[in-house]
Image (cartoon, rainbow, N blue to C red):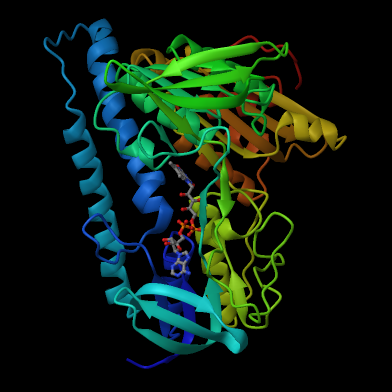
Amino acid sequence: MTDKFDVIVIGSGPAGYVAAIRAAQLGLNTACIEKWKDKEGKGVNGGTCLQVGCIPSKALLDTSYKYHEAKESLGSHGIGIKNIDINVPDMIARKDKVVKQMCGGIAGLFTANKVTSLYGTGKLLAGRKVQFVDHKGEEKILEAENVILASGSTPVNIPVAPIDGDVIVDSTGALEFHEIPERLGVIGAGVIGLELGSVWGRLGSKVVCLEAMDSFLAMMDQTIAKESKKILGKQGLDIRLSCRVTGSEVVEKKGKKEVVVTYTDQDGKEGKETFDKLIVCVGRRPFTDGLLAEDSGVKLDERGSIYVNDLCSTSAPGVWAIGDVVRGPMLAHKGSEEGVMVAERIAGQKPVVNYDIIPNVIYTHPEIAAVGKTEEQLKADGEEYNVGTFPFLAIGRAVAADEAEGMVKMIADAKTDRILGCHIVGPSAADLVQQVAIAMEFGSTAEDIGMTVFGHPTFSEAVKEAALAVGGHAIHMPNRKKRR
Ligand SMILES: Cc1cc2nc3c(=O)[nH]c(=O)nc-3n(C[C@H](O)[C@H](O)[C@H](O)COP(=O)(O)OP(=O)(O)OC[C@H]3O[C@@H](n4cnc5c(N)ncnc54)[C@H](O)[C@@H]3O)c2cc1C
């Protein structure tokens, strides 16, 4: 093995592995170092996203939704199924199979693109040297023209609910329950808390989400957030805002462990709940443990992220950083785009990432999805805008599918009609919002979408109608604002 590379990437999550593949495609001699081991103790690529994040959570969301549908909603279609059962170990085993398949895919892509895959730990030294220690403990010093740091993030722990990996778990532990907890507590009603709460709620857990903030999904457009809270509440998720957890105690009762959680509510009153399992989902922090030698020249910012400029250059020449370990939303696709940008910049091209158009999705049912600015942000910025909303209740395909909850909200600039944001709660919201992201990338107006022919009957007709509503001429709904 050569010890000199054009590019060394540390971390093979969606930021790092994409950067490595793109760099290799561009003819750069590239190595990617990854320290993760799978359940059998073998080195494996994919990072948080594939191992304990996007993919396994969606596998469980899909299984639990199919179960829920069979049990609760197929009856309205005249389908009766008797003796519906869920085998949790089988569900977890299927999830593991999906993860293994996707990780194998990355290994295959590395081979196909001639990326050198190194399993072990990487540490950046001064002068673009990297100390590599493999899983057997053997050490080597590698050198590169460019180093890309993509070490990702890790769950935030809170002292009031210390993870014991049994009764109190983080998001990773919540992907591994082998039985359905009767009473499930979730600290944090954010994206991950809602997704994991939904998984176990659909399987029968009584779920209580304790959220310290006083508004639900504060980063989302509040029209959509309010609608989503209503829908999720109807599904049985007990979401309690302004609830600050003050302590937790694991106790044993009749030979079974449970956790007693204390909190203060919005009026400052003390509350207490007992759960069989408690998931702590209060956010993630950038992960740089053991990554940087003291003289690496790479600086961190006040939040512990690696400091980078808009082009993902760090404070050390030839060293770049991408993904969750740098500023910006902790989303797989944001890191992947940064990975492509950095690889292409190393190869002499001049791409940029458009940070204004990064879709964000919560995979509840229905999905909640957004791109661009919220109405609250535009108001705060003093922008003038027009809004069009359209409910799925007036969309034939949604009614036919029994998926008519939710709405699309489109926001466009008052003067130019250029789309500034789109916010959706409803069926296939993740895919619908992507249509608007493409339109925004091309600088489209709401009228452009309104003039586009949409297939009928589709969920996406709600996007067209919301765009028409911006101009006051939605067809399948009376328009509040009438414009020409
Ligand atoms: C439950 C859950 C669900 C999620 N769902 C979604 C979703 O639906 N959509 C979405 O966009 N995002 C989702 N995310 C977030 C997403 O997983 C992250 O944004 C994404 O994985 C970040 O990619 P990354 O490459 O920056 O880092 P990571 O995926 O964290 O990968 C970093 C890798 O670097 C390795 N590493 C770290 N230090 C070293 C070192 N010194 N040497 C060698 N290797 C090292 C780590 O082992 C890891 O494999 C979810 C996260 C969780 C926890």
